Length: 274
Image 1 (cartoon, rainbow, N blue to C red):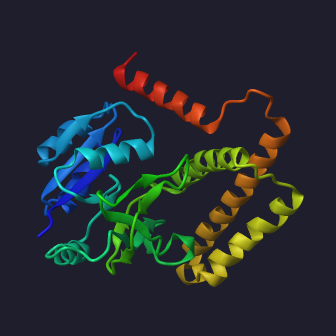
Image 2 (image 1 turned 180 degrees about the horizontal axis):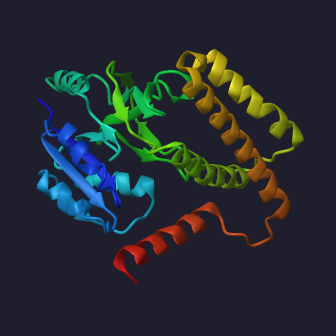
Image 3 (image 1 turned 135 degrees about the vertical axis):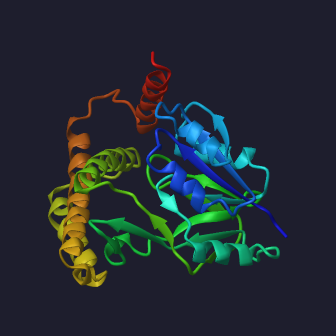
């Protein structure tokens, strides 16, 4: 029967880490890779029985792959600190690992709690995430946004949901949209994508229609309307920032990787108090 390692990467997650670890207590091992928290996250994790390793921040993909590499078992469940494994999902994974699973990785539907309710409409749901995988046949890949597990074989789906407490409030949601769209625009720019008036004019309303009508955001009332509008705004912002980059970025502007390296360096210096 395969054993399971749950891996979590952290930086200043004191508000979330205890609940995340409690939800994963049934696993055979929990590994936390911390990148210099100053809020007591490592101590809280150790108190919950996790094995904690400190490592400077190299980026999401490298840090998640490192966590899997140092785990004791081949089957990995990658968990974020703001996520929870409810009993139904834990039971489904336990049953799957009662024998050698037929697939190399499994996608899990994720439901987000936001604006006072669980959101099961818009682009928020079901938000499938490939999180359960055999490290011998799968690993994290990606650049600056949308990192994901890439498996060398078949990928299955689980039925029960992973719970996500992503945003503290609407302000936090908008702050993240601003950061995400900056990275997304830079990635698109480096890939040769360009934006014009048509993109700014057509893509945002199309995103709103998809979220509010096709993805039934209207069923969540004002919350669904708000999320649909924010998702459309995110699309507008991404293309507007791409347009700005292509028209104002001077020769020699830093690439996304250089920008991310700078952020990692500054984060490490802050964590060390220098």
